[in-house]
Image 1 (tube, rainbow, N blue to C red):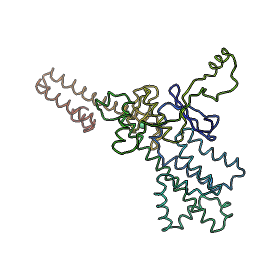
Image 2 (cartoon, rainbow, N blue to C red; image 1 turned 135 degrees about the horizontal axis):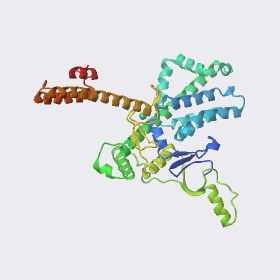
Image 3 (spheres, protein in one colour; image 1 turned 90 degrees about the vertical axis):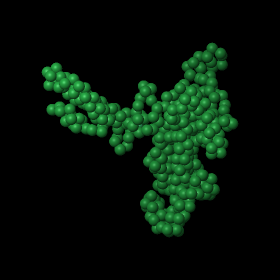
Image 4 (tube, rainbow, N blue to C red; image 1 turned 60 degrees about the vertical axis):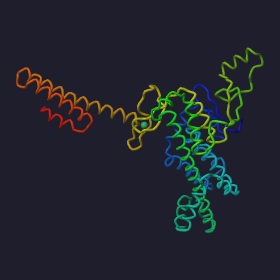
Length: 401
Ligand SMILES: [Zn+2]
C-alpha cells in the first residue's frame, strides 16, 4: 500500500499513513482511538483551517517569489504539516485544494475538478454576484495578497485574469470548509447519541456498537442517505507491520526470525486503504465503539472530550480563547468559589443558631419561637445557596454582626 493512504489500529491507537510526503519521519504516528473524532467535532474552521487554506493559495499565487522549486515545496510542506500531522482528517480536503492548485500551476484546466466539489456552485454564484457589483473590490483584494514584484510581471489584462482565478480558489476554499462543517454536524449528532443522549433505558442497555447501528439505521430511514456502517466494502490487507517501516533484512532461520520479530515489535495487522475523509473517520468510529473509551461532556464548554487520567473528570483541558485558561482551570476556580460561598452561608446559619439556642436556655426566647425561627432560617439558607438572596442579606436577616 505504499504511496496510498492507509489506517490501522493497535494498542488503543489509530495509526494513519498519508500519501505524499507529509512528514515522512513522523509517518504512522498514533492517535488515541476517538481523539481524531473529538478533535474534528470540536474544530473551529473559521480560525486555523481557513487561514491554512488561504495561506496556501497565496503561496501558490506568489510562487515566483520562491527561488527554487525545493523552496516552494518546503514552504508548502511547512504550512500543511502543522495542521495535518495534528489532524490527519484534514488531509483529504487539503489534497483537493492542492490538486486544483497543481493544475493551475501546470496551466491545466482546474475548473472541472473544482466543479466536482460539493457546494462549490453555491460559492461560485456568490462570487458572480460580487463580480457584478464590485469588481474594483475584488481587484484590490487580490492586489493586497500579491507581492509587488510578482505583480509587475503581468500586464493589466493578465492581472485581471489572475485576480479571477485567485477568487475561484477562494470559492473552492469556502466550499471545502462548508463541506467539513456539514460533516462535522453529522458526526456531532452521532457522537451525542452514542455517548451523551438523553437518558433512555433501552438505549442505555445497548452496547455503543449497537447504538451506532440504531443511529445509522434511523438516519438512513429518515433522510434516505445510505447507511455509513452497513454494507460498506473496504479494501483491507493483512500486513506484518512495525510502528516503523518494515524492513527486508530479516534473518532466514526461524529462531533468528523470532528474535527479529520480538526486537522490532512486528505484528500482523489489518491495514485498511483509505481514499476519503469518511473512510478514515468511519474506521476510527468503529474502533471507538468497540473500545471502552469514556467520552464525557465538559461542564464548562459543553463539548465532548476524552478524560485523561481520572475517568470522572468534569472539565476538558482545552483552552477557552476568551479567558486564556483551560476549562479545567476555569472549572476548578468556579467550584472553589462555590464551595467558599456555601461555607459562608452555613457559617452564618450556625452562628445565629448558636446565639438563639443560648437565648432559649436563658429564657429570652420560647421553644416554639425557636422552632419557627430555625425553620425560616433553613428556608432562607436554601435561597441563599441558590443565589436568590445574597450572603449579606442573609446575614442581615439572621441578625449577625
Ligand atoms: Zn471544556
